[in-house]
Image 1: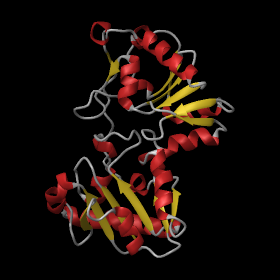
Image 2 (image 1 turned 90 degrees about the horizontal axis):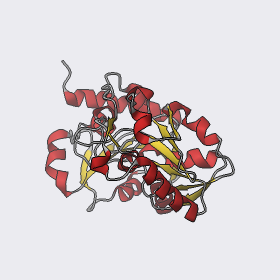
Image 3 (image 1 turned 180 degrees about the vertical axis):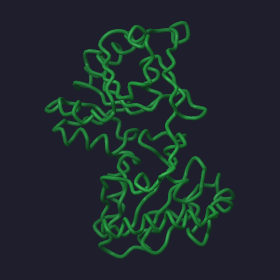
Image 4 (image 1 turned 90 degrees about the vertical axis):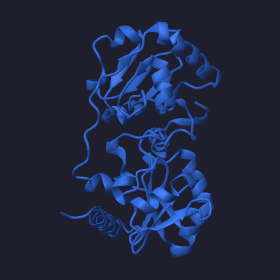
Length: 296
């Protein structure tokens, strides 16, 4: 049986072969997923798959001939126990910032690939400023970890929990109307929501998609007329859902999100660039939407 370190070594080699084909000199693997939560489900633990590190915060850089894992003070002991130092340099992110490591280990003109689903929209802007013109930052269309992770765990199958109004204190319809007023004050047509706890609060629903977190993996669009598009797998929706949340709620499978957003062409949509990923912002701008940066 191959050891974990041998498996990690094999995975790194697969990523590097993919990088060569993509003409990328470095690939970034953050501890994050499409929903940017600190705590993520097992099927989205990409950093652990690529390095062996299972802490709740960290980042790995993989170049064509070396790698590094960056953690904060909480995980300096754990990372040494879990990550093979022959495969990755182990660094404290405060003492050795990852962007400094990049400048020391990549030549001018190098290209860094990153999955824009796993980084905040404002991270992209700030990182490009830090790197300057010497090193390019390019969003990739497909994450190599997703390509090579053959034994990836299945997502949690529990349906949404409908939280009674005696616990929430106010109905989803009233909440949506209040938030819709805020959207109108911002002179926007809708708000693109990516924060899982925000959507759980707005619809008075909870879930078991993430261990020890009562949330569901989803995205949403709240319109200025208080209607709402919920992007979630329909198998997660219980029978009484529409009675619970009230009128004007559309449940849409995530793979139809792009088509739905395309209908917003010419509209003004607010997005929290500090809490939403770069992929979401690009999805809106590609649809010829005017993105207004507003706090969720």
